[in-house]
Length: 247
Image 1 (cartoon, one colour):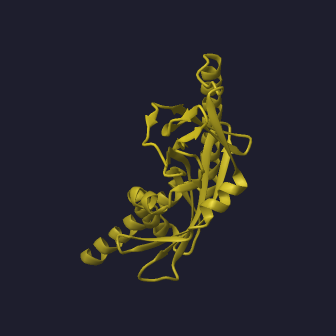
Image 2: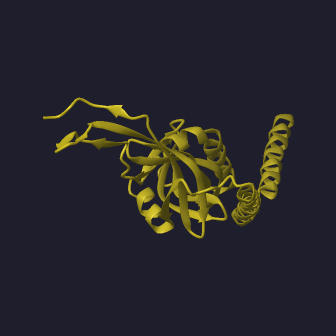
């Protein structure tokens, strides 16, 4: 009787803990609403910073090149290399299926849809929504690139129950760096010459000396507003490099 009583007490304790965890867990709607609220608050704060920079004259565009990218074009570019799959700790298969960018309020947001399934039991799955932003913009080798930074996620639907949801959430949360690494960087083809080449020429009394004028181009500001991503580039020229005379 004592052993039976101990087993019953242990089982009751486990059930009580599970029920308490279920009561304490937030619904997907609550998590999404909180994330949406945070995104809007970030927009307000970021717009205030942008206005302050503009008032100080730090967002001058007279000597800069502006590149504009529409949300729809960005969506096509970002979805082209998807889906991507990642096996997490040999237990969970995460398939990143689609992404939607949002360029609003000086925030370059991205929203991914993914499916997480058990490696051992593929029929057990969970729909995952991951939200983040574009970061680390660079211009190199004729491409404007940016990396994705995931900031939150939520399980929208699942077939694994409350305890299974907790396991999926724990695996995703502890492997966020690996998930970000498998997401392809955003790549926008940009045709910008790296130098101005001048060919040598002799036209009567006038001689044109051959050479090259190097161009240095770098990302100055990234401004996502009104469903468009504006990238402002700093450009400078020189010094002149004289070349050998051409026949």
